[in-house]
Length: 114
Length: 314
Image (cartoon, rainbow over the protein chains, first blue to last red):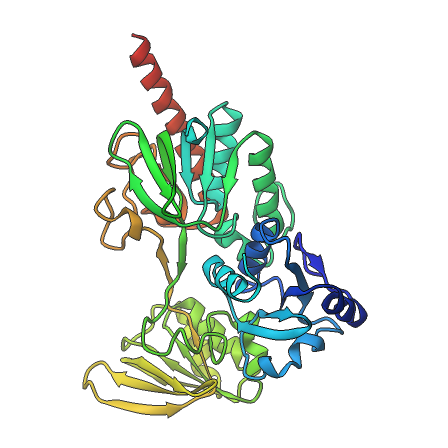
């Protein structure tokens, strides 16, 4: 399990329900490593500001991580974490490796509004 | 505006900054920590901390959270993931501007901005980050199973990570800008003994090339200035750390490595401005040394403020 203060995606069913029940979703799929932890930190920091976005993390080595790992948008990715943004269940943006607060909020503002 | 007036502002929220926050807030100083990254600094990146006295084993992330909560519980305000956009440290009342809009003032400031991994700053590096370029072998090594990769660097991290990456990669080429390594001899020998590892010395990568992901690099020989292209699946960069002190250039005294120069009490050349942690000039950089620095700087800042008050009363 990822030791973050974010809500975790714990199963494929939970992931599907997450996309069905939320218009705007950001999922960070990673480990507790140097490139992933700062992204979780950014998500924790901005979660209360972006109440219209559901923030989740997902363990990269978990049995249900294929829901992110097998996305075509992540095909060329070779750096953790894989961070994927969904609007109405569809991928609108995906990034690989560490991202700054500015990079994350730019994507959120552009795709989900502030 | 009054709410933005503090006794001490700590810039940086790693172990040095958080420790300073704990000591200051517990000492009844109105304290604000302004942190450009995630609270915990590089400590959060450590998978397991096993040499922090009093704690047998803990993740860096958990230790960071405990320190953060300790500081908060004493009344310290912590603001993270922001941008410091202005500084005036030389006057008696110090000001710090955040995100081009909020101004905070204090009587003393502690600079505890830590350090970060160096990057090459060459074309294509940003584009292929996470798509062939990595700065973390344990994070991304398994994406390069049976692939050809390059490791850039000549220090202990580069040599040790090159050896560890041979678990996955079919070949590892170490590209180093000098004709000898800075790593310990045993690390060099271990790399030299490994059949999967080869070396390109006195050379630098000057460009990363590819479409969707990294496909090749341009390497330049530092002696002859000749260049050649090498097809490659991945590049891992381990060229050391640099202090986060750009903002302080021309304000506080820095040495030639851009580390902050301090006195014994960790005060800088500016009265009331202290520094602590990995951004200062020192030999060893550990969580424990950062914590010690944070303590000394906090006590120094408290003494400075108490002396200011005593002068006013006199």
